[in-house]
Image: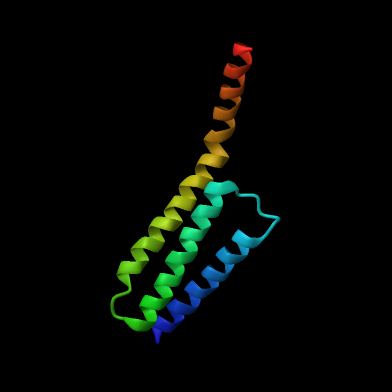
Length: 97
């Protein structure tokens, strides 16, 4: 029974990722869309694995965890370091002109 609850939760995540990829209001760029697509496929793999082999959910969960960790690292980079790196690069390019 818990495998179906797990599969249902993964289905909700897959639908949210699909919506985020197709939504014109979410401007994530190429890397963001690629990360969301990876997370979508990892979630679909978790669903298929949970339905077919409910006693071995750890394998696709590892891929899903890597996808979520990648999204977390990307969000951390965009919020903390990217603005200062962008300003530094713009200053350096401005000196070349």
